[in-house]
Length: 253
Length: 313
Image 1 (cartoon, rainbow over the protein chains, first blue to last red):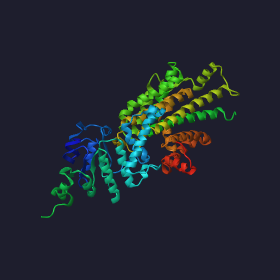
Image 2: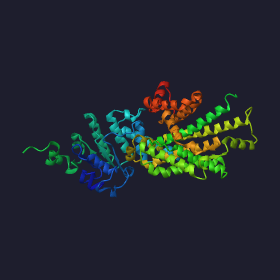
Image 3: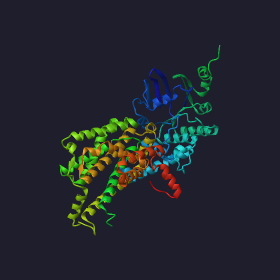
């Protein structure tokens, strides 16, 4: 069992954003989290990654309690994420963006950086090479000197994935990676997600693109108004009356 | 030769260099996107620590100056830990308050001699000349003793500034520099990418304080006298304006800002009554037309393309 959420609730003031969410993610799975806008999906990611704590409930990762950990520590444990609204370091080069991701797996401090010790140079070189490999994996040209913020939209989304992968996660949380992508870009993304799974990583995916979700996910969790209304394989979910109701509304009797 | 080595010009160049070092200190804290207005406070801690050590305890200058920097750095860690939870304008106000607190404390302590300040601080020039004459080198060519000592001070300051530029450039292209830049760009994204933002913000704050403290120690040993008034609010604004005018993206920005703003009053000597007005107008114009400062990353990219060759930061 990789990631376990046990009766997690979160309320902002009096508003219950999430209530009693429980589910488990197994190693090597691709899990989709779907639900209408405002259902609380991104809030769930923020709880897992320690941006803010849940009001109630437990979250653990490989048996380790994630509650109370600062986000950087959660990342160091092997959970990485991307953001729904792209949050790249806009003025830095794509390569530097990915290299920032490698921060928690490298060590050189001020002193070594100042004198460029052999250890620092070796580390820097391997960081750069791995970053270049990741850029290649997600399909971004690395000859560009232009800042990440000026890349086309679809590439920015993929760059975010490369940056998250640079933290060497075992589990990666993707928040609407296909948003704003056209059909062929979404297809590339599907292949990329499959590749990430082949690398032995677990993927948790928030996505509105049903075609992508149904094709790529092993299991789905459906959230509506902060509550889990269904969980199962894509085929089961498609037939679930509660899910159909959440998305299409109830038929007038 | 005499015109170039004019006492007055040398003095101005020395002030330019000290201000450039202060410019580097604010660049350091700004490199994580933290607007700290405490640099005058750190400068005064450095200056007083250094002056007290040399005047009252007989420490050699070359030891007292780094100790002054370390003292400022130490204080910055104590106030930085709680203060760096604040961001933007709130941090600016808190650090501004800190600067005033330091000034009032200095004004009321016995060891700092209150409002009278500390005088009779041995100047760096005489110290260096003495050291040289003990080696039997009292003068070079046709230079007077005064010119020689001023020139030597100049060399020392240029060396320190060059080292700081080297330090920052190296840092920028390392793991730590990338962490700084990512925090400046988006703090919570940086944290989510595995960067301990508290640690790196505190590190940048302490490094900035160290540099400011050292600049304070240097200035104490250049002016013979220091008093609480030297490090008041106007000093903070002055340091900040180096970064505003020159730009804070690249290290060269605040240095150019320090150069221009230190030269400006000298050039405007004939219009000295209007000096502050011109200063203020300059700030308003910068904010309106070029908020990123004279030199930004974009400027460098533009000139790189224009000149068709690579200019290193």
